[in-house]
Image (cartoon, rainbow, N blue to C red; front, side, top):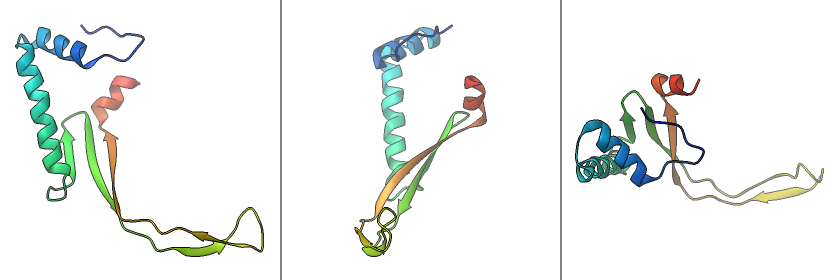
Length: 107
């Protein structure tokens, strides 16, 4: 059973623990994580569906934010004065939603 520690677990410690539990060589466990990262990159990339699910744990979603134009609005700190809000380019943000099983581990 994995024990809790005061500081975050390192990548090496995580790989070692999984290798011991699954009785797989550490290199194979590392290869699984590497391939998982490759699949995530494809699914979350511009040509992919924009969603990746780690079943039972979390859902990773890409949110495409459109660009905004510069505009003026009243300054909330100096009444009567106008302020210019800068234009922002289009961007891609990532949102991670915890699934029910992951929420159950915490609470």
